[in-house]
Length: 385
Image (tube, helix red, strand yellow):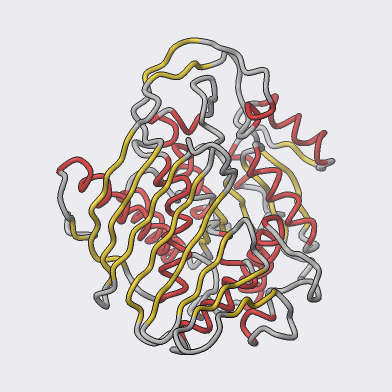
């Protein structure tokens, strides 16, 4: 990787630390960091051995040493922070969602184009090697016409009323939660693999736990799962714990997705299956190194992640030989390698393997339709509003 590109990370929770680790794996110099509070900034400097803790966002984006800003803060901060970085001439990798509203995300798409900056949204799950293998097989037509696209994304980290995270609060995470937090990962992955847009939705959302107990101090994502949760102040919850969404795709294919953050025993269980006129594919994040291939006229197969068995597209995203498992942290490494390589190449009109600001905006427009469908209890066309 080019050593002249330098980065800073804004936000030092679970995702901020994950970004720093992945950047160091590909040789990117992380110059410094900025937390949500001064204490978080100094803690990040000490924890990750960084040279610099910025006093403000203005100081960070004005630093001429920086090329790329990674935005890993709570959702409500994304728009202002991304906007400031782009206007200062920085490239940006933003955690999903790109913004809280489609008006905000639309503005960011326009700003990135106006300033000729690369804007990426961290839909990192594209970068499992077998996701790229599935993408290349579907795009080559090996499944025939796509008929059905279905799956689920289930977690249990918010199962108990004492489980707490900023995502639960609509003023920080947005009016929807499970759909925007994990559902959009599934949507991005499957629309990218199939190349098909979702044109209409029929959604049923529910807040399974309407009252939760907010602890007195800050809680890092997933930390409550370690036990010892404090039963603090009772807070009414309006964001969704669960959703099931019927889907219609542009080619006439049908689909369905179920998402939940209150399903006991499921830690990070994204699964998908695609059924075509000639064959099927299926994959699970719990078993990321195996891709299921289904047939009518011959035995089904399981393709193991092995560079020597993968097509050319997928082979480039497999960092280890066959029999050497690759997982979640490797997707960040591969995505950031793709983004930084793209920046270094300098042709920003070229196709990207990563999700761009335009991809992130499309996800928010889709979420707008899902929210409207749930409210009005009917099919809604995506983008119709």
